Length: 481
Image (cartoon, rainbow, N blue to C red):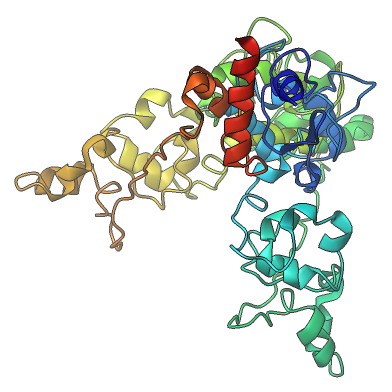
């Protein structure tokens, strides 16, 4: 027994197929394998798009699936190019935002990462996908074991059948009330103590492009799909005159670009935002096809993965690829102008030319408040409601909002941070950083391994008990002695 434990309980060596990150795995007596919850969710973009961003490291083993030990793509959790590799949280953040199923990380998404009740009526660890979809089991699971089926955000109430939302008219149909009260509580707003009505989503119609001269009309569909027809930097005359897909260095997607008389180049708004994850992580996910990345005024080719699944240009825009890029690496991809902070309408008659606003003006005490009111999309002020701090560092010390003698200053320069915007009583918000997890339950003779294992998810993975953590470490140490 000593040999079995000491040999198999070193998952970060060459003996283990799953390395680096043990979250969403369990030990089956022989190796670490993925739990059903590791792949129970759906990717937020298409599986095909995820397989471009996260290439399978072993085509014979395939991608993570329940009960297997297939290696995760390295980009799911690290910037390294080979194992052993340390976890880079930014890489995991990007994977969880777009492709948690492909990466075998579903159990760490919001829908799956919540505590189950202390004394559930069934064993939460043995729940199957079939039970998650079963009319018999769903309501019980939602109450007792929400993390097993991705019900963490449902407040303990789900539809007993999975297709109620296909036709929400049944919620108000005479003769269907007993049915929906029993089986469609979530969709029809019949959850206990809930009056929330069901919501419906409508899809906007796709844009079309009809302003080209007849001799180029065959290109219209491709151009519309690639953003040229809806990009406000181009006039109708420009659309008629230029054909960038045959001559431009920037190809495929012309959003966040402008024609300077010679070539299409990136606008300041293309790179005005910050990446959600680190620049280094983004450069791993979106390697530059040339040595240059997009920058204001240049025409560097975007990384293909920023907007397409293709491996060469010309390439059609794939919406899922852009969605992933915008979620984590908008600046690296030169797509800042399409993020929520930058994609809003400016006022009809602004006091300045919104198209010529510079980064320096965005940070200027003189210009910021005017820009926020008239040209919010130029500086990423779309979600600021027309009110920003006139200076950029008010939030460094929010105590100034209440300091005697600073009232006049904050009323003029720190309106957003101090909740002094016109017609608002909202106070400033403070963000607190959660402390990192630590691991303190190991026996002393193995404590030197604690930091590395904690960083790789073993200490916080609820599939392993404290007893397992203690026994495995001591066995390793005894074996080495």
